[in-house]
Length: 123
Image (cartoon, rainbow, N blue to C red; front, side):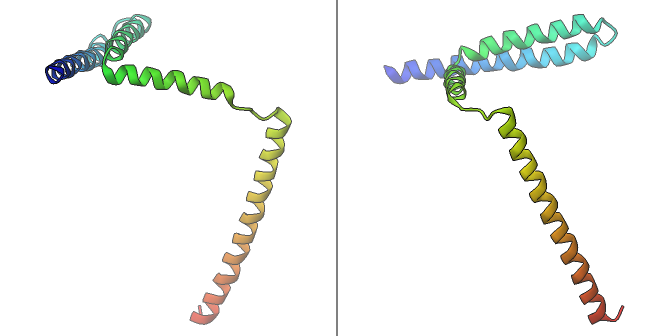
């Protein structure tokens, strides 16, 4: 009996995903079709269509899993200890200095290798 219930849920999810895709396609096509209409009205229509499609998609099993994942991700982001402005600036300057030094080293090596190859080939 659980197999039948799972199959029915799966087919219902497939229908929900189909409706969501059709809504998104309708928003894109409608936006193109009503090109002469107000930009604000078209943007509002697209936003409303995407919101309805997102709501329908969130009612599926995968949609619910995605919402749970998003909530857990938000909790983890709040736990991150972000660097201060001064720490970020110091790290940025260190990276820029290291990049400049490596760039100069590679430029010098390229010049030396170019002269060696020119000497060997006689150009």
